[in-house]
Length: 467
RNA sequence: GGCGACAUAGCCAAGUGGUAAGGCAGAGGACUGCAAAUCCUUUACUCCCCGGUUCAAAUCCGGGUGUCGCCUCCA
Image 1 (cartoon, rainbow, N blue to C red):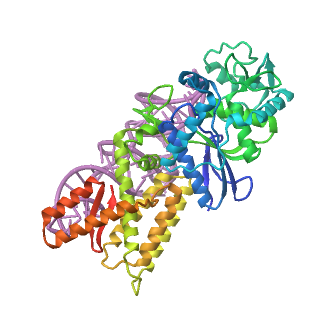
Image 2: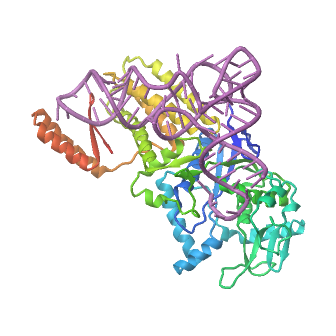
Image 3: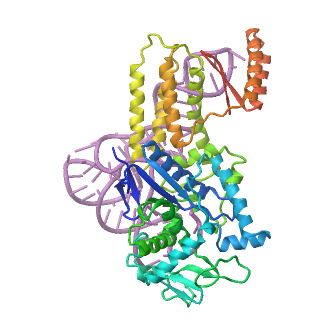
């Protein structure tokens, strides 16, 4: 079985073949750390986190690199607004990034390079491009000359001329071509700057990714990922720079997710219609946000609304419930004797096969979740059996946990203090119930409910879970 | 102007040639001291519209309508 991925550059699903056998290098464009990220950004982080985890699950040795852009106009402006330095600003929002992303269940990258820590390599690359006649220096500003790269426009499927005719007015008269873009920007008064052969200045946006990706992953990346609005100009420019310098393909597969919309409109910082994860997670379980993102195919646009999040929450609870139930039973059931169970175990293998099959097809998490819902229904029905098999319970649970490592769900959260308190109250309620003191029993149940604890009576005894 | 995506039940959403997955919400039933959870049944004679190809199309082709996006910083 092979994995198929949709490649932006060919606009087709292609068979996934890595540069080196069983190894995958992924570079994902990360955030500019001048603010909290919004849920549109979160979609990207979550989607590529799952893709990374899935490839690992399928036996690949995955190296995942995601940068932090910690120097650019936005960084400088925001630092000035807040009256702090650019590095201070970066530190603050890098920390916030890790907090928010962890809540969403997104793993840290293997490498999180920062632009400011790779300036010498960027200078080196720019020198190389100038030597090759693909870039030029105009009084301290260095530009990439787009016509010097024949395949320019290949990724965004726009010939250079079309890009020019559709382009909005560019007033920069230093450029030889309207689409030439900055590799190095001359220092303006008061701005952070680094030394270079062209004088003090700072790197342009695109060059950092060309440098940091190839430094950690080699000249040809297996996967270059990012948001759809990066296709042009960011990724087009990265590609031109990198291929212009190395003469080798920059990335085998370009993966871009769909937009996250709000009121049917793209959510973006510049439109001001965004909601930060920082804010949302005050009111909504971030796991729900994650589930919401995975409930549609990653390349389709999805619309955000509180109502949709509510729907997602109900769905996730259903899956969480079955996992809770399995864990509960796994600790209570006696060892199997002669319980027939082969049929159920075979069924489990079939569910696994289907899950892998749909995920292999361009990471169809929506279909993957559908498989889990079907298994959940089957499992719940099976658990009605007065004497379920421990082996079936354990193996089903193991399967949910197995896919949980891919999707980022079903992790165990322990809280011993809470456990003890809840157990105590449950014991009291059981006492009341035996005495048929329904009023007291219900009062205790309400008390637990206020603590966010839901009680469930089962044939195997009382079970509880967090809401 | 150029390029592209999408349009499937009340809502969300898979499905790219073989006769409509899954979830949420709703209704009815079972279970329960009452609940909760769960299970069963039920909700698209049909996939935006009009043509065409085909034995067969939600799926392919042509045309139309609508929504959104990229061509500028943005994930």
